[in-house]
Amino acid sequence: MVFEGTISRDTLRPCTIKQVLDASQPHPDADFKIDDIEVQQLTFVGQIRNISTQTTNITYKLDDGTGTVEVKQWIDSEASTMDLGGGGGGGGGMGGGSKASAGLVENEWARVWGRLKAFNNRRHVGAHVIRPVTDKMEITYHLLEATYVHLYFTRGPLEAAGGGGGGGKGGVDGAQMDGQYGRGDSEMGGGARGTLNVGPNARRVFQCLKESPQNNEGLNVQHIAASLRMPLTEVMKAGDELLTQSLIFTTVDDHTWAILEF
Image 1 (cartoon, rainbow, N blue to C red):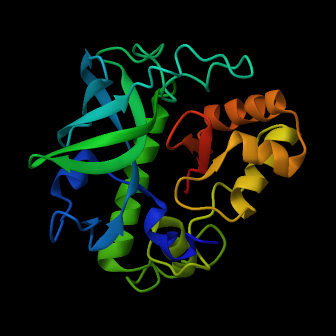
Image 2 (image 1 turned 120 degrees about the vertical axis):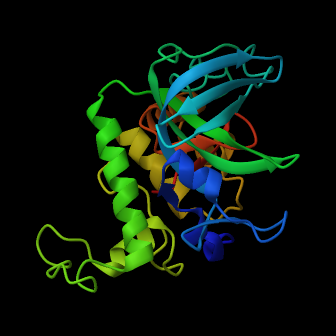
């Protein structure tokens, strides 16, 4: 694929907000680094402290106990008036809305998938997906996962740190971790989640996105429909299902999708 060489840095990195704020950037055009590993896509959880709705975006201020950061979700004014396929563009928090999504209210927790950006020396996260946390155990799980990944990259895999048996039953070997969280080569690079709990058409659309040659912008729904010889309305329904499951995200518009690497 055209973007094969960038897969490893585009894998999804779980982190805390403090890690977002402390991420290093050698120069303004360089990628950010966490634990000396390049990151572009990241995910974290946080409690919504403030919601500010503007003409072009909705800004959420999130706090996870380690720090606070602004998360911007850009509004696609055309998407709010477009009724392509009758789907209205994905589940709650998937972008393109003109108001805060249902469940995203102050003092509740949310999970964010997005990219770290800087403007005028101020950092924010551009959200691909933001959705409410409905199970509070997800908060604990995420913080444990972020801690585990941080320790892996700073202290090495469990077997190297004296933990023993890291590659055995119940353990995770180094090659798997490297590929899953962004230090592997392009052959290990961050495939999306292994088990797809979606319908047959959504699986076909996901496979098309995964295997078709493309650039970093992903594939447009028209291209997917033509490739799969599937009605456009069915492609849109499949896309909504994948968006709701956070398996894909919108890129240049609501009808161009790419796999959310994990």
